[in-house]
Image (cartoon, rainbow, N blue to C red; front, side, top):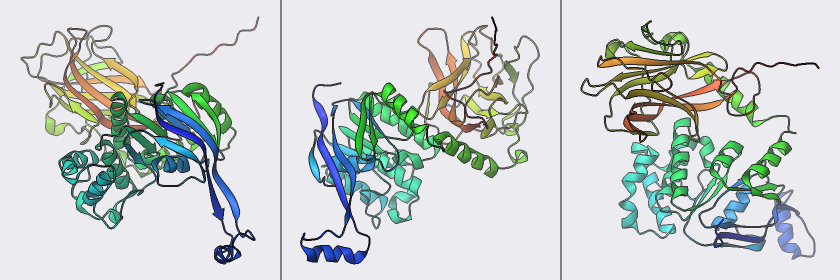
Amino acid sequence: MSSEFAIRVDGLSKCYHIYDKPRDRLMQMLARGKKQFYHEFWALKDVSFSVGRGETVGIIGRNGSGKSTLLQMICGTVSPTSGVVNTRGRVAALLELGAGFNTEFTGRENVLLNAEILGFSREEMVSRMEGVLAFSELGDFLDQPVKTYSSGMYSRLAFSIAIHVDPEILIVDEALAVGDARFVAKCMRRIKDIQDQGATILFVSHDVGSVRTLCERAIWLDKGRLAEQGDVFPVTGRYMEFMFKDDETEGDALREEITTQQQAAPSESDSQLVAAQWASTSIAPTESVSVSPTLEESQVALDARPVTHWGSHKGMILSAAVCDEHGARKDVHAWGAVLDVVIEARVPLDISREHLSVAFSIKDLKGTDLIVSTTHDFECRHLPDKERFSVSFRLINPLVTGKYLLVAAVENRQHLDIHYYEYVEGAHYFSSLSNVQFFGLFQPAIEQQILVK
């Protein structure tokens, strides 16, 4: 941690006066302190900590523990009852939905308004408007009043503004919870970029995995008081132990969400794929290569808006999807079921097949590689000399209940420094669902033995 602080909080407290009836507020004014018609609610009580420059700190705690109130006071949108907050650097904040927006203004006008509040000239922000539009993916909605936006659109606009004002301190208060899976993954990647640039980040989330991935330290609030602060793993570990006492877990809520998604999905006949005709010679059961049908016959598509898409020969990958054992592309897969990761490519014949490799990765939405496999692994399979072919990677689904994304790539593995002909991160967004509660990132089949001596 840097010895120079970016945020310092000393003895911070916030008390709200709660009135049982509207008339009690008037009575309090008339009483002039002689009688109290309200009761006190301390949203935050005597909290102190500091955050060094370039440090990323997670703030955790149950709903109502004071997290949002703390961030609002750091941002200056709420005044403390007592205590002091000091910040050094430009602060960009993603607080609760709609915070900082004038709902009668258009998205574009709100971009300019927020930029001016943060000290940017109108001309400077106009020059960055295309970047805001591209990242938010709002299209024509940028010129519509914000009051017509959905919660997800609010989140997109707020995050796009925050990352385009060169924040020295970025504050994120669960604003990404309402985004779709693809946009959340995109935002997490951008947060890591801002982190690498040396910005200070305060990150509030109920997702302990996200906090552990992004943060070095954690601050745990409970009932408005500082319960614990320190290194992220021990603090979040004790917080999880504390939360485990509750009946309903975060995993239960996620499982319910994915089950709803599965029930709302189109019928299998609507998403049925053309099964690839796998060659039967010199191919292991878990990895197959075949010459592809024509493009019109292929029904496996790439997601139209991947997190990243780059490479020296973009367009090589025609399709990529996580399918079931019958070749049907599905967005929800059961734990323990057969998965076929199918990648179809068109590789020009003038590219040597000697070091050519097709690869896939399954990542969580935080961008962590969970499963990676390539045709270069182990036996270094020689890909067909035909221009167009498909590769299938078959495995038993070990993924615990959660949301994931597929990465597809075509590579040259001649050197340790891999050359990517094409890399698509977010070729297919899907979920895994288990009726059993598992711990960890994934749960492979494990043989157990009990020996009595």
